[in-house]
Length: 304
Image (tube, rainbow, N blue to C red):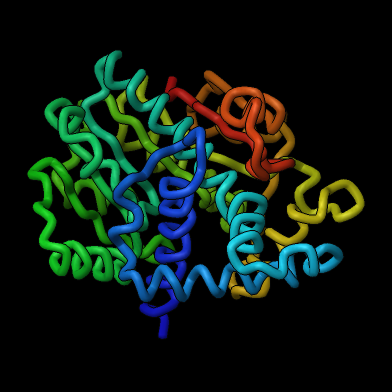
């Protein structure tokens, strides 16, 4: 049951990236391999499921989206895809900068069905990639890779880790992570679901195993995230869906709070993007429903 839950979450995430790659122009983040994780039948099933969500996400205008294709487009572009697409684009843009400055290791915390190692063979000549995720998710991913007969790059390392029981330091040490090599950590779509204590604990673990000058990129919700009187409906939908799925959102931060927490772990904020910054950077001049999510910020922090 738990295994199914992890694999379904991963499939829905892959679906959002696949839909964007197949249907949207211009592309914010082109994961041209995402569709490969889903059979045609699975893609059709998730399409139908997401299109049916129009009645929950947009009940006032559901009648205007009676056509399944239009309903699916609205749900994916408004609710499902904006944040995963833009944060992945930002993360990989920042990673390329880090590699140019000497980073030799890329650690993906909560990797899911990430395809970076398969999309960027040239970068893997300079970079070891460590995918850290729950054993169930990694088991599902490995079985899909075998089923698809994909060659696993020599420099891709799978790091199974139960975040509730294991430590990142121990997990990476067992995976031949080099503590002396400048590293780049991505931590996308995770902080919302952790307590502030657990967020601090993870940052301290990164600081313990990575050399100074290493970086971490993550997204987070601002201090208004849980205040329904100050947020738009789609933000409230996101919070409600997380609660209904059994994995409620727990944390949000003001900028000063975040700055203080990062400093406590030894990090300095190098770049911070507000929703407006993200809109200008990745969503300007579009003619569809894709826009930066309100109350969601991106942060690039450097270990001092």
